[in-house]
Image (cartoon, rainbow over all chains, first blue to last red; front, top):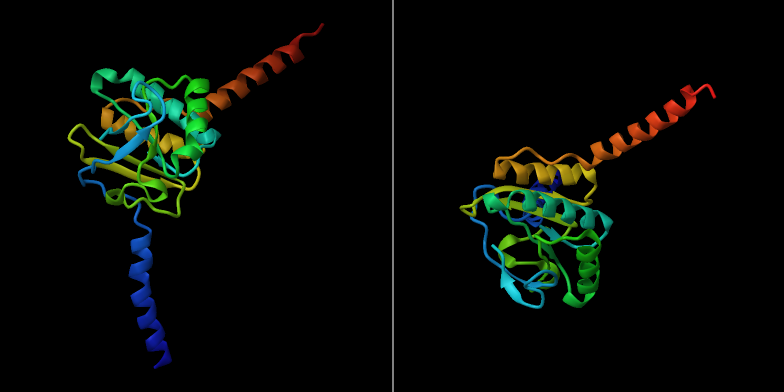
Length: 51
Length: 148
């Protein structure tokens, strides 16, 4: 019974751990837009989106 | 690409992206380096990298969203470098996460970039080092062969 409880606990924790390992957009997704503070180049000092 | 630290490997990688973009401007190649953190912590370092490496095509930037980065990207907080490659239609073709950015990881990321551009991947930085070594060896060998 203890073994069953442990297995259930692991089953519940594993998806959370995997979710935390997500590393950005998946292949096939559309790249989302986002803003950055430009530090170099012609747009230095501006906040803008390059996507 | 997203980075959590601006070290020498990031500088060399940024330069290699810059070179690839410069060679493929006609294909509308673009690249952006995004540091995840506070602007004040990275600005000086990024300016130095751009100046020393003569990076002209690729903007070096800092995320407005701080260490977490853009929410939509869900950048893994446990890795230092995340490279996202997308095509002209803005469809993601590669999403890579690295703890370090040595020649091997750089080559992998640049190969994904070159693939979406439809060009050959740039020469490996590891190969160039090997060639330099060979040249050095040749010099040594030629010295040895000289009977005088």
